[in-house]
Picture 1: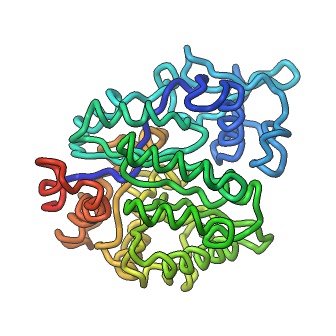
Picture 2: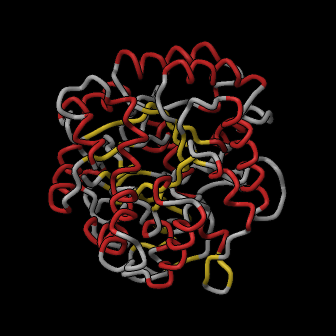
Length: 381
């Protein structure tokens, strides 16, 4: 059983997609594109530029985004913006993404071709917040897809009851299976650590829903040098796990890989392993999409990275994810399997089975209870 713990489905990027307007959604898209490491290209000519014109220094300051006619180019499958009459793009989306959307049918076709049995859909503000759409994706492929509930992290501290109500609807009415929490977005309107204080009622509601939480950790609000800010966010996570010992969690994307690069190598601070002393804490193995522009398939320079993850965390707490369709910028879906399954020969057969599906099946097991013919298949690996 091969389970991809990190995939997406989304409506055309220039649709409202659950926001109050297309314009509101496109602000989130612009901020996401601006903050990404892909190079900016001038169109035509494809020359790169260092111009950082899309957003001010604070990428979360949506209200102060410059007006550069940021727009979707459906014909070429990309976004465009204009500065002084010159058009620019950045391939945040993989090239030629049809209609700038990624449908469940497209994902299932990719899964079938790559031999992936089940995928867990993630959410992000840049890709929409439409609960009905996400639920429909799962309903069309109930044996192939699971989905997280989106959370407006920036609203929790000030609109706690409203966010809790929306979350309960996502899980109990729309039948979604997990919760996505982007920690950095919680700091947009609040400087309080997200594990307690004004967030406590929200987390108590999460605990009562009995579904796993998938965290994306950033650098927090401190001005500490990298990777100190990330380690401080891990400390917040550790406190959260102590407070909610019955809730399973996982860290999306793995670690902040580019922040850990030193002279072309990933160097781990020893403190980075501490949260995984708690067996409820899991980590996504998702390297090609984050580092595929720096290392070539089959990612020989990254094999020691995975080996350390297995040694320090254990394969039973590691789960494979791809960030589909975004990983298609750098490799095929099949290659995102092959680099682990065919080339990392230091892995035992059981390590491979854990990483490629069994760990994810255990993380999702509570959400699958009572679904005929599904729970047993996943649990068996």
